[in-house]
Every structure is written in C-alpha cells, then in structure tokens.
Length: 193
Image (tube, rainbow, N blue to C red; front, side, top):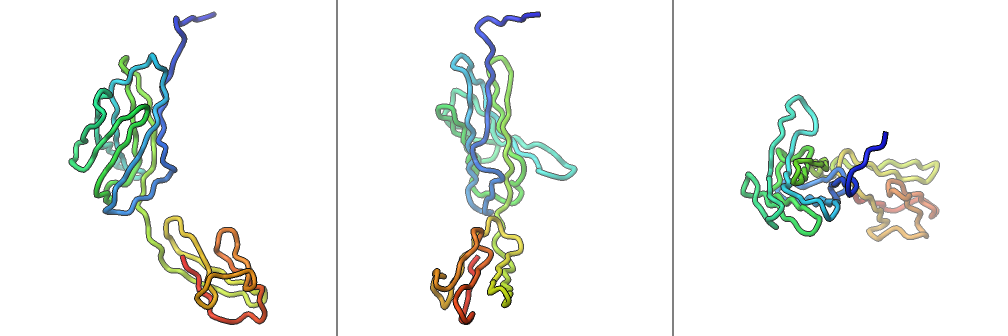
C-alpha cells in the first residue's frame, strides 16, 4: 500500500546545545540554548521551558516560561527568568540559580498545527573540590593525587613550588599521577586540584 502526502513530510526537532549535565554554581546565572531544526514551511507557534526533578517520587513539572514565537523576548513565571528567540535558537536565562532549580530542563516547541517536539537537559549543582589526598609508591617513584567529589576536577603538579618539568617526571594524561624520573626522589611535591 502506498501512501502519498502532497509536498512531502516534515518534522521539527529541537535539542539543547549545552553539554550534559550542566553544572551551575548556586547564586550564578543559568543559560541554556536550544537549536530548532525545521523546514521553512513549518511555523512555530510557542516555545515552553519547564523543569522537573531529576529523581524522586515527586516529579512535579514547573513551567518556567511559555512564549509566543512572534516575540523575540519574553519573561517567565518568575521575574528572574528570561527567554530570547533568534533565528532558530531559543535561550533560557535564569538569574540567581539555587539548588531548588536543579533537575531536568525541557524545551518544547509547538507548531501551528499543535504538533510539538521536546529537547531535554540535566542541570546539577556545581560541587567544589573537597578532600584532596596524595599517596606515594616509593617502589615505582609514583605520586597519586585523589579528590573526593568535586565537579570536573583538573590536576596539576608542582615540585619545589614550580611546574613539574621533564627532568622531574611525567604527569599522566588525566593529571592524577606523577611518575617521578629524577633520582633520588626528594623535595616538596604539591598536587593542585
């Protein structure tokens, strides 16, 4: 059975451009940008941003803003929420992000016929670096640096308050380990996280 649709079939899509999960420092600004892919013949009616808890029993969805596509800017339900539209992008800006604002964010684009498509993104609190520890394996001239639960920690090593050079040793790709090549193994080593 063949089915023919005059003019073909188009389908809008929307996805949030920020890498996931997005980590935000409480008190700072959250900015999420969504890219809308559509055919030129499709016309967007509204764009809605929502948030719901990422986990737990209470999955109550909160509408942050619903904007008609004709307006390039609109405000949300709270005074600190702004949505802007330009070209094929929709941006949500929230001033004064707090821990209550973490969760799964969704942007839903609705066309004139009422069909909609949704993009999602997880937003979590940024956690500062805590509990850094360094251990040494003298047999292998190896120093190992660990960090308990910070968000995206990066590691660097110092020897006698200066960056580690090739004469001192080699740092692993992830920065956790320093293989000391100088002999004897001595001095003040510092791991910065």
